Length: 268
Image (cartoon, rainbow, N blue to C red; front, side):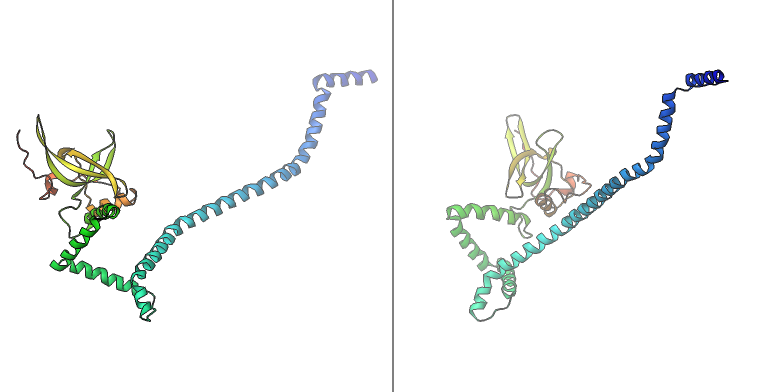
């Protein structure tokens, strides 16, 4: 009997090695212990993931709040500075008279600006303005500043017609396939040996409105969008952020002004 049992044991060892039995036993033991170990490992990683989510949410909402409040704060700050600056022109006069009311100088400045605008339509006001311009233009540095500032103010003036920006233009610049916003300032006839052609002086701002380049572009190569001069100035000042989603090129014949695009090109 002993020999038969030993033979059976040998047969079992041949079919199922002892090492695998030990691994299975150890595996069953480790599997019984693995839930607690895995739970202990997964618990801190869950806290870490939750902390990352909370941190990301707080950072995103904080940045959103900064984005919303930044333009509002800048607007109020600049408006406050402007009010104090304008109020400083006449407030010393009222303080000298014993009247210390905040905003009174600002209100007086607004009334003064309105009266200047009214007086410029009269002969006396325009004469005084011409005399003042004559004195300013005699000064070396101030003459350049005044000339540049006056050109910008004329561009947006509702009463100025002779030197204002005529139209908003889109030209191909600087390379083929790229376009640039500009303003038509005048139209001229360019005489060449092969003939004459009508070209427009297009002012393309490179730094807001007071610096830019002037291009002579053939009138047929200029695209005129459905934008007013004021809208074009807003686009330039905002750095292109106020550009409409869709721009429509208007037919040239439907928007020709008495000053732009009506020259008869002479034959040479």
